[in-house]
Length: 119
Image 1 (cartoon, rainbow, N blue to C red):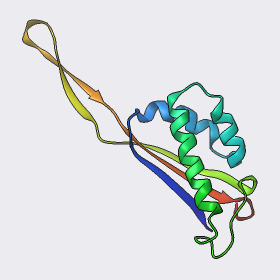
Image 2 (tube, rainbow, N blue to C red):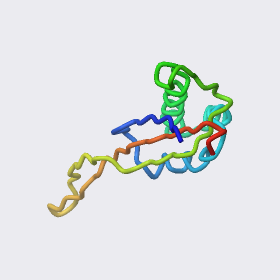
Image 3 (cartoon, helix red, strand yellow):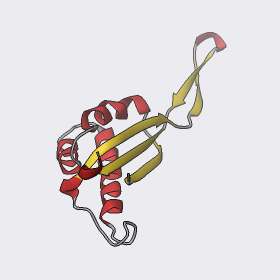
C-alpha cells in the first residue's frame, strides 16, 4: 500500500486549533477536502490546505511512483495528524513581583493520501 505523505513542521499555530479542521477533512477525497478548506475562515485551514496540496503533488509526480502519476480525483485523505511542536516560553510580569509563563505553541502537521483502489 503506497501512501503519499507531506509534512509541515514547526507551524506557528497551536495543534488544538488545527485539529478542528483536520478532523473535518479526514476520510474525504483530496479534491473535496481542498474545496472544503478553501471556504473555512480558520488560519489553520490555510496551513492544512498547503500540506494537502503538497501531498497531491507528491502523488502526481511520475518519477516517484514508478512511472505513474495519480489524478487528484483518485486520492483519499487517510491520515491527518497534528502533533504538538516546540514551545517558545516567555515571562509576563504580574502584580507583587510575580511572573506568569506564556507558552507560544507550535505544531507539526502530517498528511497522508492513499489511492482509492488501495483502501
